[in-house]
Image 1 (spheres, rainbow, N blue to C red):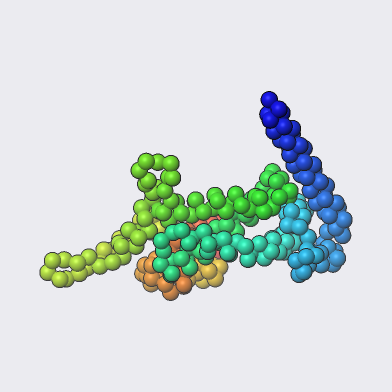
Image 2: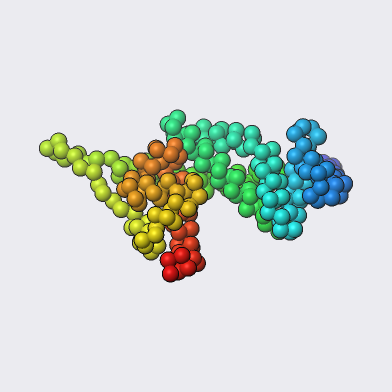
Length: 281
């Protein structure tokens, strides 16, 4: 009984110290935020973009400033603050994206592409989280939130690549066809007589999406797409290149090519629906 009482006493003390520490942290961050110069002034931006990491504002304060910029509808300011947040966390996120893939059997080329895509997915997810004003804990403990975002991003990424297994299942199965099997569709099929032929498999959804926006002025619309999207749709639909070939030409992964293709098709469809009649009468 004495031992039990001692343990309960220590647990109560630990909870009290933890609560006190959390309250103290909140007060400290609030004081730093309140002490900032007026938003948008030269002094304000100097503090936001302080290059000395020891004198830089806590990331939690930058999150509050980022959300303030959204409230004020200051898109350039929002992007400016977001750039600082990503820059401040770039080194650790880049290191994480490479280290976490060490447990996965990959070629050096695959590891490089996976790390690049994993890092990009994490940045996108962090951006979505910061734009959600209801997720207040980002303003209290940025690193803690980032830790959990990394776990979610990794699982989602490996699931899409067909490499995530249910650790608790008796028979571990992936949720998607492995990328290696999908890639094998691009390889020529060997016949018994030694001849070979390549399987011509069309992406029906992509074809339908393109046909839904196809018209005489389509090449002009493609030329007006963002620089990253323009070569993807041009090479695939106007030159007949495969996604794999385009990925090699652009130095990106096939998944990145598919993502850019999807964005380009959506942009083309939107432009035609909203401006097509005006442009072409």
